[in-house]
Image (cartoon, rainbow, N blue to C red; front, side, top):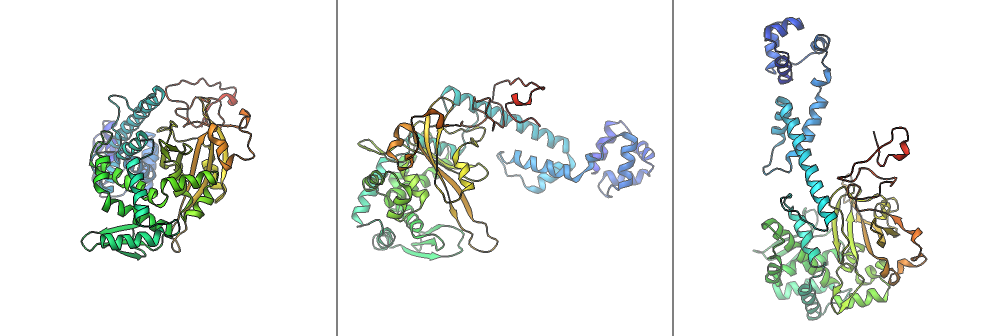
Length: 461
């Protein structure tokens, strides 16, 4: 608190002896306070308030804690790692500088959001001079540019599926044997190793978590197999101008290996035939192929082979806080990069009814209508006090394809009044009268009548 006391004195253009006299303390005591050698006492704080009319909140540790939190958020986007000790030192000794950094960061984020909102409105994902794309954003754009379909990996997966003599219920054992016989790789299933998959090339051992289900373990084996057999293909695909920097290329390599794994567990033609035969019933497909609900949803969003297309789906995975950790689109559905997503979307309603498949006819502001399917997925906690993971996954398609899905039964697809009006996110959504609006649209001024609170298009504190 010494720096704040010294700053108060400098703002009032007082010498140490003058401030000490005003507070009724000795100059040496004041000097010790300013050098943080003594703690500010309640009587001294009250005297400061009485003499200068300064709110004692200025010297509150809560205020300092709030500034530390804001600084950590701001500095997290910098080019260097800043330790908590350094952040605390800045907040304690130079709070004005800290608040200025927070303000500058806030202005930067607002400018970035405006830039991205303008790009979305103009139909372009990039504006010259805008902020650089994060590696994970580049990877997302890479798969979007491919319409979430990687034909070379699909073809390779079908060839290997046949060569290894795999079957829907025999993938786990078949992959284990293939890795052993063709690559001399030993599979070790172990608990508590901190990772789902870890490969030791020197010892040629593949460690896979024993806590995973068999379908998940098979997926991890298939992912490693992609690196062993298709490393050159993956490297060639990752050499794409969309990807700037090694981090983005490493991320896309993992994404491509995961794509191959899904294609190997669910080979294209067999899976598409089963999906069409079951009217895209996700739970039936999951039981038939021995994998999870999320894996089926993800694979359904990739079935865009030119001569044998499935329903073009969009796939999304979110957590309770609204963070979108996965999003893939086989068509032109655009997920918002700014302003979060819409609370009226049924993917969030899924958290209130765990394990149940929910359906929703939803209409975007541009008038396009979609059928959405949503359900929670996750893993239980692995021990007492260990939190599990829970997500909601959503699978959507244009309303014109809805009749091919079992989930359209009982729904009036032709009645526009059955559609729930949703948006891509408040900051880019034009539905001013939405009861769930949290923010005004970026770049739009909103007139608010103070005498009629019902006209307020977003909550006013």
